[in-house]
Image (cartoon, rainbow over all chains, first blue to last red; front, side, top):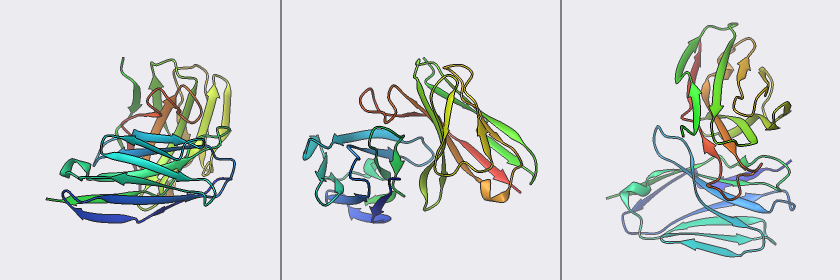
Length: 111
Length: 116
């Protein structure tokens, strides 16, 4: 089955700097890659996703890139703000099974 | 429209006890799933359902049972609680198996379970 590795497990950045979180996946059949954000004590929520026929997708300060050949995808957050502090999860699926999540990255934005 | 409702929010069990975690959604989603969240382990799939009467196992199904008699409800049963089942449990629902489009997975607020 699919296996998703996520790095780093923790990340601290100064407010205004950029943050990058990287994930790799094992199943070449995977074609859908969402990112979820979980604030402290809250439920995970979808923030952005990308399909395998697209190399990059942006939504304001966040962007996701996908390299199908290398089987890795990344989340980029620019101009980080304190409200970006949260745990971020990447996930992957071929469409035939539910999402397989990475282990999460705890992002701290220091004011 | 309440979304996904999980009960209880907190529970303490003794080893060997059984209990049912409730999950209900009012969005007419076909797909529902249960994940457990442990520190440093991310979200791991326990069981999932693609519709009423259809369930399947996920990555960590041992010690848990599910059933899906209606579209709305997807309860998770702990048969004989063990300390290793101490975790935060999330129920999720979606229009598609992977949550593509339509805001992805809608998660419940979680159940924090402690087994002593």
